[in-house]
Length: 341
Image (cartoon, rainbow, N blue to C red):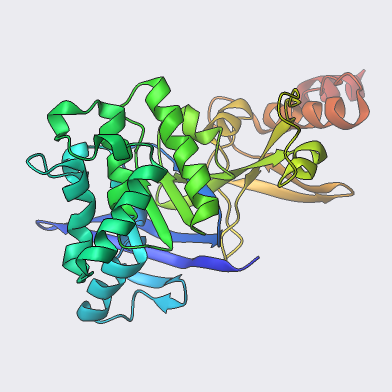
């Protein structure tokens, strides 16, 4: 597959008064064309910063970011303006950022087209097609106060696609709507992704989104930490483009998720906090090559001796690969007493 987004060692530093805040510190990311990607992470991890850079709203401090063949770090201000107007669509959590309240739904959708210089006939045709796509053409003359929150967000999707972008960026797009509206928004994303050849990135805390995208990338401390890939069964793959007869029962697809820890270009990885706590891993580890891979062993952990820390890892390895009960390790004092007897 072709990569539409490539981020290499991406760094973003903000200056606040006399302080420097590092929002991204060496982030690496590749997104394939046509992919629907979820981005998760704690507040302050760098999710929104990454989205702003990919959308051309901010520039990175260092590194390389390429979107659809354009190096965003090297674009002039004028070229960056053109990139935002013609190749990127934005959908925000707050509908006030997506829509203008005193305009009707149709007028909101047509506004970006007017800015882009579209002719009236083309605007009317494209706006109708977009409102049909989100199933709201019958409410085209309604103002925002006459629309529900879910309907407003669906109008926001139509506005985001008014400039016919190749990349759609969503910042918590389901964060302020109920479950039914969120499912409707996600369903529209899937349908339009296929119809319009879109690549979609969604920053979210919503588990409903994480379960319906192709891949979820977790960002921690300004770096990609883990990724979870959604895999469907061969049955679902076989049914793509081959719909069952009308009235026939459609079998439920089998979906599995596989989580991987991501290594950056320098070979560094971020071990999830629960594993660090479970195995008492401190600020240093020892690597030991094994037949099955690479064993990470904690050393010098606070509150536990090195022997105890190694024992916990060895016990886990025995249970996992040999299903043998762990044997207690004799202390140096016990071994010394055995020799003197």
